Amino acid sequence: MVSFNTVEKQSFRDLITTLDSQYELPGRYYFTKTAVPRAYNRVRSELQNVISTVEHFSLTTDMWSSTKMTPYMSLTVHFIDTEWGLQSKCLQTSFLPEDHTAANLADALQEALSDWGLDENKISCITTDSGANVKAAVRNLGWPWLSCFGHNLNLAVSNTIDKTEKARTDRALAVCRAINGMFSHSWRRRRELQKAQAELGLPEHSLVTDCATRWGYKQKMIDRMLEQRPAINRVLADDRKANVSITWQDEDVLQSVNKALKPVSEFTEILSGENYVTVSSLLPMLHLIKEDTLAPSNEDGQLTASLKAGIIAILDEKYEALPEESKELMRKATFLDPRYRGNYDPNVDETRRIIEEEAVLLGRREQSAQPVTEQEGGNKDESAEEPPHKRKTLASLLKRKTGAASTLTVPERVLTEIATYVQEPESSINAETDPLVWWKENQNRLPVLAKVAKKYLCVCATSCASERVFSTMGNIITPTRSLLKPEMVNMLAFLARNM
Image (cartoon, rainbow, N blue to C red; front, side, top):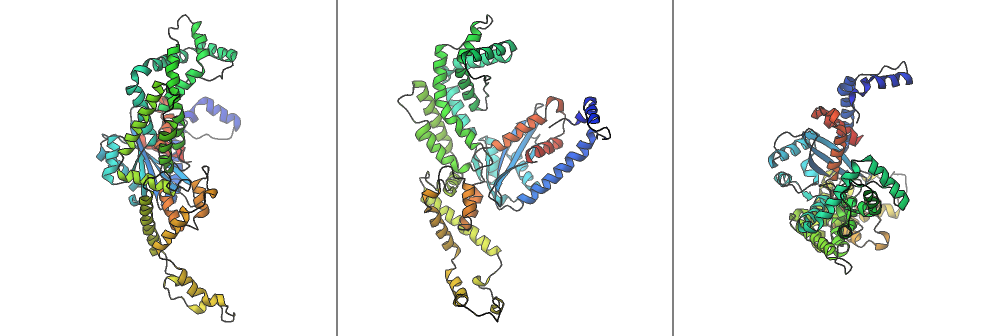
């Protein structure tokens, strides 16, 4: 995260000499040519050994441009390890100077998987935004695809505010941005704001500026502006140069917008995680948003009600337009989460049948990969089973027949496991149950179904993992390090995310 030439600055060398006068500090070329490549190769080799053994994995990808408009594509991998921990790793940040057409993106994704030696048949899903080029690229590759929930919610909120309700919200939001600008460019106003906060007993919070690509920051800006309105107005009232203030009409609009947006602000944060299961909560959360969080209320004003209705309408449109494969994936993940088990799926019987077929295929594949045992028809020597001098018991005499009688075919095993899973008592599972911990404790009871759960519960509900890579890259490719070569950028981002 630090510039390589730091080790050649005289002040840093003086510091090291003070700490240890006998230590000889290496130059920047040691880090660029030796240390970083060596660390990258070591961590990459360790990661490659791990992911080469997983049965299924999911991906996320996104595009980004640096301060010098250098284009990159990030790719992250997600899988459930042998201890049922959800792992999230950055594979690479590829330099992509070509036009970002569907064909070029598809080639870049395929090349990345080939470079890592990953089998495309093991991909559970790839989560991306709804860009036409990336959707077409994934469709051309034939990979299972899921639309990023955060991107869909951002579009729903932004389109509702900026288009449907633009006439009623434009002035109030413009006032918020103007006030943010006035305080961000004046240390004197910030000092006076702190004094006013102390006098009025308000939290000493800084103001928040919204971001065009993150609707959550718009809500945070409004919420903070409402919280600090008394202190802001006190400072601006004594400022002759200030020509803007929050009127009661503006406050009324901001209150209405905040009332509609605040309840759903937590959903994006919850589904943006990458170290716990998120995909299985998509259907339940969409149901909760529609039936409870944004449901019409008699206490809602006209603007609040309009915003709620607009957000729900766009979300319904987005998820209704998803390919059937994406809808099926969400239903399967919901069924395989012990907290839900298909409760929010109107086609749960069909989903159960699909999972049954998939579990049978996985079970047969596993069975064919195992060596033939005695119960499967092997010719194991009976004399080797027990020493001759040992007296036989009734249990030992009946062991083979009992075992053979209790052996089930793969379809029978799958049906038994699904029936057991569905009938699991509700008292043993609650809303706080970690599905991965539950499957770890029950994988021996439900071995075939557990494999299907591993396949789908590793899918990400959002593409935030790739965007976090870009946040890291933004701290690496600073204006003072804008000449870093793409190969070095990839190494540094990889190490920063995976070490």
